[in-house]
Length: 146
Image 1 (cartoon, rainbow, N blue to C red):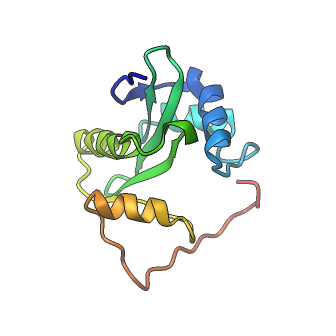
Image 2: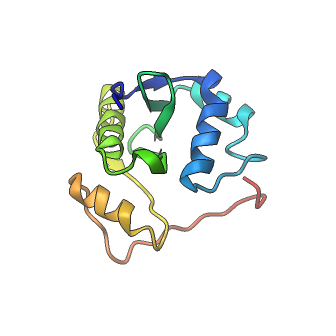
C-alpha cells in the first residue's frame, strides 16, 4: 500500500482523527479538550497543527498534533493505525511535526509518554530525543473530563 507524505489536515478531518485514535487505542476526552469545538478552537488559535498520513485512497492511517507555547514545541496525540505500524509512519510524523514547529520559530521539542508505553519511548529515543530521569509530569484540572 502506497502512502502519501505527511501533510497538514484540518477541522473537517476531526471524525477521521477520532476514529484513528480509537483504532490505535489512544485515550481521549470527547467532552473536554478533545471535543470537536476544542479541536477547532485549538487549530484556529495558530498554536496547533494537525498532520496526517493517508493512503493513496485517502484513508487516514497516522496523525500527530504539533503544538507550542511560544517557546517549546510539543508532539501530541501521535497515533498510527495498528495495521500500518512498523513502516516508518510515526517517525515521519515526528519529523513533520518538528518541521512545522521550526517554521513557527520553535527550537525545543518535547513529548509526554504514558508509563508502560515502551514502544513510544523507543521511537522517540531513536529519533534523537533524550529521556530525562526524575522528571515528573504534574497537572491541575478544573474538571476530570478535560
